[in-house]
Length: 584
Image (tube, rainbow, N blue to C red; front, side, top):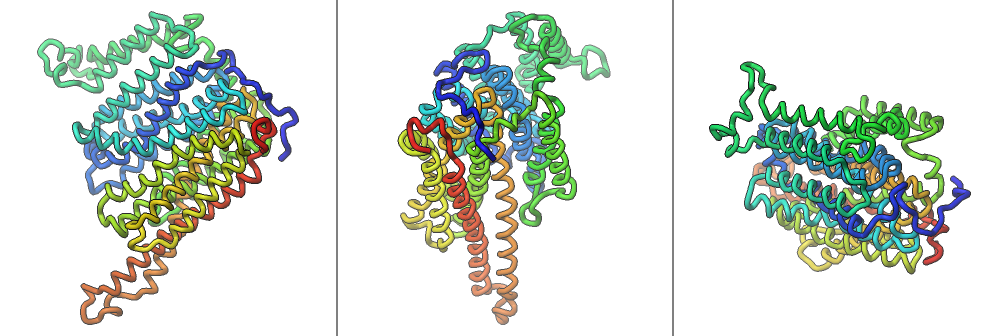
């Protein structure tokens, strides 16, 4: 690949048609990233309660896949489209729309009494959460010139990673005083409050007052209909809002009719109002042409099939789920997407803008970082439960916390270092540190977590992950044009997410194969302890050693991925624009 013949200029660009964003709006956008990132992890803690609440028995935990996978599917598959919308229509409208989608998804999940609505709600939450990240990164690029944006990019990255730390803590705090639904009611309030804050502080055209009233009525009626609070539904008078007006016509309840009428009025208002409509439909046909509907559909299909193949896989017995269908579907859709994008005048993903080495190099580094990161998130707690914290989920999570707390620190430090050191050196050095930490983990035994040395190793791994965040984003946004920053940032997030999903399946498959081979070589308890096979200490010790071998295999794979990320960062993360502050 050759460098772009027209590298972007160093001065701070303005968002398309919007002007440079204010610090308050960027602060709220960053806070929104924190809220949605925390939600990703808080659900893992509450998942058993959620399943019980939607009618799934504790013995059917395999049915949790759609709840987790639905979020990942919404988060990843729609990112290219949302990134393109942020470039075409401005960052603020996309931020507001994503927050409202996140709020709506929270409402559906909070009121779900069956699996279907819960999955739909989590999918909408995923779409909203995913779109916030590229829009926020693009906002930072709009506000600061390339040589000064590494620190704010590091802050955004730190806040996003802090969600992994705060999410479980927030979930535990909520669950200590209320049930799992309170988590999503809180998400609903935060989503609406942040959307209102972005409208108030951002440079967003004031919406039509009548449209706002219709939107508020529709949302309020829908919320009351889904929540059905007992104080209202059981009231002699107000409870009539839930009683059908016509016998046998369940859809004729006053609240449902009010929701439909208000929503219809909102649609009509959006179609006829010239400017500032809450639901801007007048330019919908032109927008459809600009976002390349066919290209967007192919991108969603390719990413959706790929994500679901990995997300729905039972890693104990398969690398991908329904691989004979989903992988060919993803491949065909991807090929058709590339062929279509090369011919269309307005592609959803400006592939030509990603020709600079620094652009596709950033994608590759993020992909490899995702592979290494998922190994830490999954297998460090498993190692703790297999050694020093058998059966203790909380203690295992606290071991992982030693790594996670260092990631935000590394993200901010990496942003600052990029002002004085070449970004490729910062990212390469950080991932080399992480690779060395994983190599050290391959030597851990049953007592390693009891010593201070393991804490040093975990902190070093987390710090290394953090150091790579700001340099990757800084180079990516420096070598691409301002008008494609949303799309480029979206692809960076996609690369990391796909790396995490693929890495989890591949590393687990390899490690399980080695574990199976080790166990087969041990022999049976009858062979090792012919006089007491039911209580065979030799067999138990050999099995425990095989389990450690399995975990060591995952750590070794993560070390390789982190090492490759370090090399790729040193070789590929080059940006002529950033040479004003540090040699690239």
